Image (cartoon, rainbow, N blue to C red; front, side, top):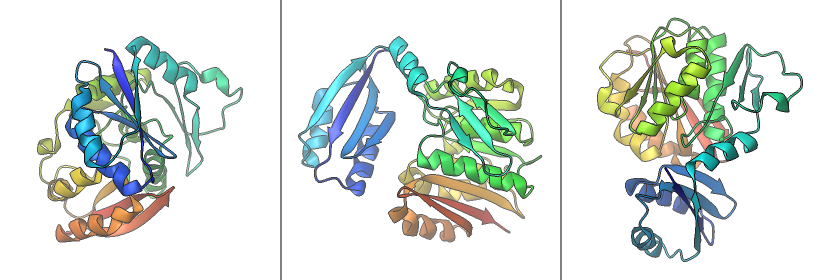
Length: 289
């Protein structure tokens, strides 16, 4: 399906304005966002694109500068494959992430335990964004501490499935559940699980947080928008196994941490660790009772 890439100029640039715009645009069908120095690019299918709806939102926030480009889907994937720079994380045993077509870009791959092959398509999660990188690093750290093997894991808002795939490769209890409310992400995760030869270890589900059952998971991963995390904090907390259930949250700015922690504490979650990278944050929370 043809996509429309809408590039917005936020002047003067403000992180809070960017976050609000992402939330507003998500409500009218935009599903991919790439930050830039003075704004962002948002993606939507051409069938759903309505310039009048876009202008209504932009006018609300005094934004007049934007451009649009129509991108055929077949060129989108080829472009990702060309521009996808391999990701190498040396935390713990280490992992690497490359696209299906760029294995030759690095003549000699560093010795890492986990080698992932991802075709991003239109789903979020390649290891390049600071939030995804922090989630991957945290999984590698938790594995060193023995917190992954044989634990029941849910990746909520899975996107490409990169987090679910890594958890499965680390020996999490089978199947790892990968959940997303976007059917294209469900397809992307399924395809990437096959590429990594662990399709039998990852169960991909189409749905939202209402799928989560009480006391089911030892570890829940959620790298999604702060408003969703706050609104679903009770569901996420109840989804953790009693005793020691861990929750890794990212997808929000460091300035959002106080609001995130207030919601977490209201539902009995305790902070274990906090990370920050390029203005984004990750919270490692746990439920101990």
